[in-house]
Image (tube, rainbow, N blue to C red):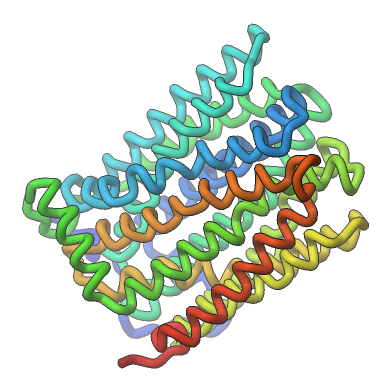
Length: 420
């Protein structure tokens, strides 16, 4: 059976000069192609979220209906997380990722046709983002488990950090592209670009050498799901990673659904300025991810939990700001904490289990990410004018999350870099 470790970088990193240490994982040809395809995938993902959020806001003028875009995007993480992890442990991960790209091309092509014809309704946006969110849930487990086939130890941390660089870099570029094209052309122009980019990403994945997933027996899916639950209960490092994932996705990441509402109604932004604002957190996160990629991180739990708390604390300040420039800066600063969370989350999970469980470990994390729809529904309901309004709603949610993270640090030694 072929093994992508054949393409691994050398375990002895002392040969790499410090100048190239940050990007050393890109010497691996398989990872380099995955990274290129990942950039395209992530840019499209961020573009779609920005385009559909602004579209639904224009169609409905309702914060709660804008929040539903995020709900339908993230719901598949909860519904499919463990099953998606099982798939990535049963089938060659290259073909799992290619299958998700095919789904994206079909869905984006359908939305492009609807936008060109006219008569788009909010439910079209919800269905489209649910389908691409389902593809994302499957890709999430397969892609990161593939990284663990290629690398291990500090090399795996570096590879995941560079993947976060692509993810966060796309969160700058994607919304900026979306806002600019909406302002200059229309919504269909954004979807035309996404359609072409998905085709390009699929082609790059096809060029990856054919490999098989690492030694996985075709166990029944129900048995694999049972093993996932058992691992969650018995593996304290994986459980710690899951608790922070659930907390930040419920209390923190729903802020994304409030950015268009606060941007337009509080800060007076147009589509272009909204795109800049939506990408601001990505600038800080990109910076943080590059710093992490440049270092040897020993205390993963500290970086993971403190980064999450830092992000939530800054988001409280963002929710209270009524100045565009200040809001922009605060989102950039919040992104630095986001990088600590996004990099350490898969690192901790993948290092906590053996090769045969990596897909399911990421599936368990995907299950935790599925908490975000509940947070989005909560903040969307609270943000309605007859309730708290968008600023107060976001302040309450993120402030509560900040306290929750600090309590979890006290209760779980793994989040302080300690072991029981």
